[in-house]
Amino acid sequence: TSSHAMKETEGVSFVSDIMSVSVVTIEKDASVYKAAKIIMETAFNHLPVVSKDNVLVGIVTAWDISKAVSQNKFDLVEDIMTRKVITARGDEQVAVVARRLDQHGVSALPVVNGGNHVVGIITSDDISKLFARRH
Amino acid sequence: TSSHAMKETEGVSFVSDIMSVSVVTIEKDASVYKAAKIIMETAFNHLPVVSKDNVLVGIVTAWDISKAVSQNKFDLVEDIMTRKVITARGDEQVAVVARRLDQHGVSALPVVNGGNHVVGIITSDDISKLFARRH
Ligand SMILES: C[S@@+](CC[C@H](N)C(=O)[O-])C[C@H]1O[C@@H](n2cnc3c(N)ncnc32)[C@H](O)[C@@H]1O
Picture 1 (spheres, rainbow over the protein chains, first blue to last red):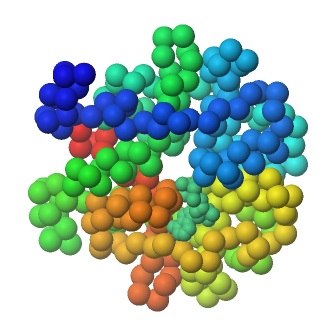
Picture 2 (cartoon, protein in one colour):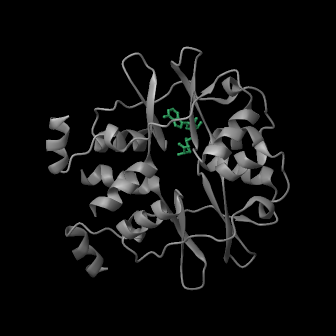
């Protein structure tokens, strides 16, 4: 939008400017093994977990799978996922989201729309890349 | 140093200003299981792998362990680690290191001294945090 374009020149970036829209999700009744396979194939560390109708219900990460290994727990994604997901909106400022990542000690936030459907994902890698462009 | 302090006021940050110095390392003949346990306990995603004399010889991450799960491969850290490690120096500018992370598609760089000993680790989380402070 033109208001975005204007703000860009003032140095304000929005989540929608830098998020990945090609986010790969997984269903909660998938196996941990399948999640591991998707993480390997996509080189993503974070998979939003969605219900059949694509509503966000959790998040599973390479770290959760590593934790499952250390506990010998290899059942379903829903057994190892985090249910209380911290999210972002596309129209939020990147700096606000960077503070949210830090506050919660996480590296990625699924980006959701009003219906809690996943429309993207923003990671500290994306924000680091923006830092590189700005400095 | 005073030159650092001066540059700080000009908005230039160095790796040594924001890296973690309490970096946890692992030896290459440790088990994948042990690496998974350390990653779970420390909440670090990236473990530099070091020789007995603390020289950097690889890196193993939660992503590598997730990959090992998908391949049913649970032997030693040296079987799953990445040997060609991209590193940083403490006196490099953060922006330079942010570009290096992006170029190589990784989220963390061990920080080494002249003898290739690990003195810290810098992650895209650290850089995202710096972005949050600056904007
Ligand atoms: C392609 S990245 C994708 C996941 C994520 N961005 C990360 O860095 O964990 C995963 C691979 O990069 C490797 N890796 C991570 N940091 C590295 C570094 N500083 N130097 C070399 N390889 C690294 C890991 O060992 C793993 O095999």
